[in-house]
Length: 210
Image (cartoon, rainbow, N blue to C red):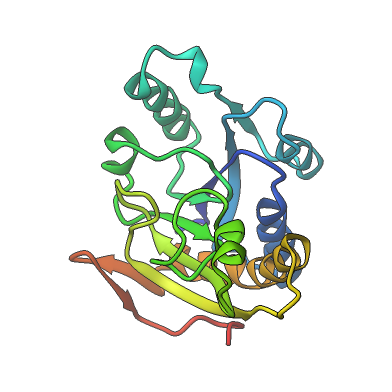
């Protein structure tokens, strides 16, 4: 079998998109290949990153489609054209609907900058600071129809200092994301971790992750 073909969905800066590409290149990972970037924001910097890495892109502002079903059908057509096996959400600011979830059940993962179920949705870092928590972190989970509600694959905590700011906490969170997300996606793509009956099952513990 050849390398699994991966599509990354992103809406913004794309630092995790690039972290995956850089990690896979540096570690010589050959079982997966980032074959497509799907972006709903024509002005997103992630498109510049994709051009530099020579990754094909599909830019799809939702306003160009009459409804969510039509929007996702257009994406699905492109995924099928590129023979995509697995979807990675990396700062993609839209909820997926059944048009994409059904054909890729158990093959879509997301990264969220909090320890779910705490602080789902937008601005998780701001929510953590507002509530004055002393521990936050990241969560990687399989995607279902809810808002950051899918089965959890992996979590890692990040301690907050008393004088923590949005800038410093964002830097801490992103440092962990860039180290961990590429490795967990490797584990998912190679089926070391799978979704069975709605439950996460590890067949082999993730490599290079503590």
